[in-house]
Amino acid sequence: QKEVEQNSGPLSVPEGAIASLNCTYSDRGSQSFFWYRQYSGKSPELIMSIYSNGDKEDGRFTAQLNKASQYVSLLIRDSQPSDSATYLCAVSLSGAGSYQLTFGKGTKLSVIP
Amino acid sequence: DTGVSQDPRHKITKRGQNVTFRCDPISEHNRLYWYRQTLGQGPEFLTYFQNEAQLEKSRLLSDRFSAERPKGSFSTLEIQRTEQGDSAMYLCASSLSDSPDTQYFGPGTRLTVL
Image (cartoon, rainbow over all chains, first blue to last red; front, side, top):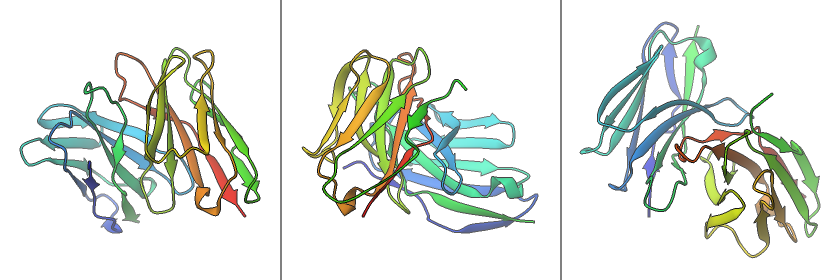
């Protein structure tokens, strides 16, 4: 059974600090990895995707992937109160006949002004 | 607005009634997905379409659930004989065929079964 694990939090960081969100996954066949941001009562919003080992940066966001350790992380630099949300990690087997995303339960981030 | 749209945004129904939700994907996205999300959980996959073909269904999709995408554009998800356990947010997502797992979600339909 495919599983994606995240710490539920809440993770509290002061404004301007780096927030570090972590995710592990169980299926070694997973090929694509995504981070979604979800504000309370809203739908998930795609913020990052990563497909190969290493780091991928986009503005204040950096996604890191280590397939050997089955580990994905998201760093948010210069955290702002508007970053306060639940962050969902999602993985896909990609190309193994299925493109469904398997999500973790999410980590709730709170950025304190 | 060129994003995924869903209708209705909220639905309250009594146990045993049938409900139908609609999803309009982003234009030119030929893949369409349905997920369900309950409080404190991540979205769970229900089913997906490539054009009009329903290619995969989750075991979560009981016989009371049916989904269609008759012309390969919008999709409907019907729940028959609703139960209180069906209360959830029903999310639709779409993607292009050249990046099928890069999925963009609509605003969701929140279902409450009384």
